[in-house]
Image 1 (cartoon, rainbow, N blue to C red):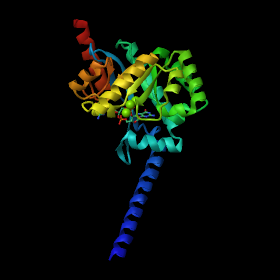
Image 2: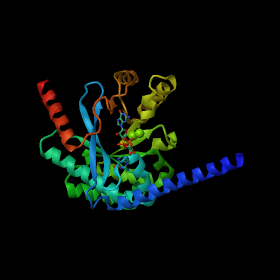
Image 3: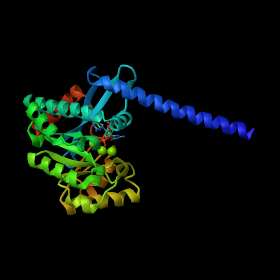
Image 4: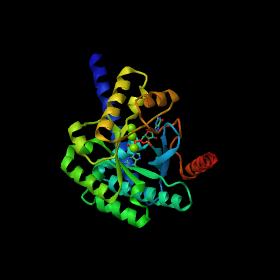
Length: 282
Ligand code: C2E
Ligand code: MG
Ligand code: MG
Ligand code: MG
């Protein structure tokens, strides 16, 4: 009996593994058609000054509504696209679309804001990445100070190349931030030498904000920001009590469902309009 169970168990794992493989291959092949089929769009989430509650910028996040698979989370398809290298073309689409949209909003009279775009490691490590960014800025007419690139701590593993690229970005006036800060491989020594502007406290520390481990992590990250002269922003804020805690440690900026969930172009425009109407009353 035990033997039989064992065999079934093995078969179970085997078929589960098989299902994962099939899903991955399906996503990979559907992704190859996604740009041409117009299956991607961007949603936007505001970055907020925690004290004044004014909008200071927005992050563009990719959404995929696949004709075959329905809506697929970026958490699932981005990692597959990174493995296969498709992220390079997809990332360029995101960059171009976000810059074009931001430029259009500026021309339409919305407040001048910086748009943040997530950049994956394989994109960042491409030789031509700096040229790609320059090209997109030129094509869209967006001034460089209105673009920020969010990268992850893993770029530190390639210190020399990353530093050079970050210098190049700074030289052309594009801002950079380290996303999900505190979750990855980070050496303070390397961080000290990287020409970046902002670190983003990962949501996991904000979720657990009422436990002492998360609180001391926030305190530590704020100290790092202060010492290295970096701006700090918190992601994933859902409750006012989290804002209070962040303000206690002088964190000035934040992002999260408390302010607005990532919203499509039309929804974000309505948000900007309300926001503009409010500030002109003051
Ligand atoms: P991220 O860059 O750290 O983005 C934050 C994620 O947290 C987003 O999930 C956002 O929708 C979600 N979020 C924001 N505020 C809250 C909140 O208050 N509560 C909760 N529960 N969630 C919140 P999303 O859009 O599913 O994206 C997940 C990840 O996928 C991103 O994490 C980023 O790493 C990656 N991603 C998304 N779009 C792109 C893209 O265009 N390019 C690349 N390379 N990666 C992307
Ligand atoms: Mg991000
Ligand atoms: Mg993040
Ligand atoms: Mg995160």
